[in-house]
Length: 239
Ligand SMILES: [Zn+2]
Image 1 (cartoon, rainbow, N blue to C red):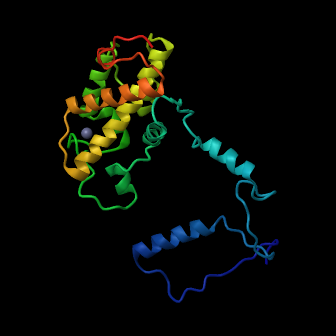
Image 2: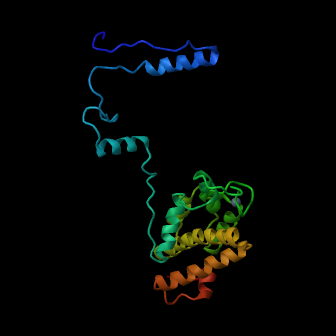
């Protein structure tokens, strides 16, 4: 004992030999330096609040400080598309779909993590829906269909908030939001058809599916009885 601290002596069976062992020994000494042993019995401590121990409050505060809670994104609900489509959009935003990059992260062996559509870049959720050349071409056609200036999205969040930034009536903005969610849904569906069934995909067929599905949903779920396919297809309608 020395000033309430317990001191000890190393009891090596042999001295470190060679440079590697000497380096390891120095690292060990450095790691032990801050450790102060006392005579009291061991007890568990909560490092975020050493005096009061564990509390949810201290944990929450630490997580908030680390900035890991969220990026403040709140997905706007849209009841003109089925729930599964809204939830899917949220999962894509949160990167919770089984794209190749996510499978690899979870230790699942895949033949390749490259995007199966463009075969150029790693397949992440964001790549599939935002930056893949195929997706960009689809979004370009969608913008021209809705008679809005072409946009360049940097993230999935941008795509899901696009409807707020154009001069559209409230119901047309809601229809556009529904179309954006339908597009995210369809891009994932055709990707899966390609990967699991080898079905070739074309920009025209995806856009056709987006228009047809969104027409059914906006007309029926949005109670827009007067909406006809011709009007929808040419974006010549009042909602
Ligand atoms: Zn791609």
